[in-house]
Length: 141
Image (cartoon, rainbow, N blue to C red; front, side, top):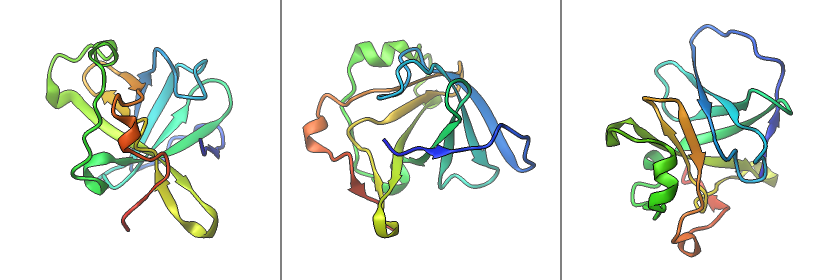
């Protein structure tokens, strides 16, 4: 997984910050449970997922629907129950982006990242139909 080393958190005007608890962490970072979702106001094209504990790393995220409108990962009921979803509208799905040599950007479609915007619980889950997807799907730019 590709991550970016970041400086200690500073408040930046025009950036919204929401804190999330990831009960099982991220794939490869299972011990890290607390993250901040950072997004520029009025710009939904991407976001950053920043660790609040452990190494100061951030992951570039893109909203799945914006880049892959037909993307439909099959996530287990048990995984989704961890998010304690009360309303489907509260669920947002992103994919982690990796910057490859030559400036190519790819998205991990095997393990989407979900956020429950109502209760601050997030999770990265491997899709049950993961064989249909790539961890390095080129972003259609």
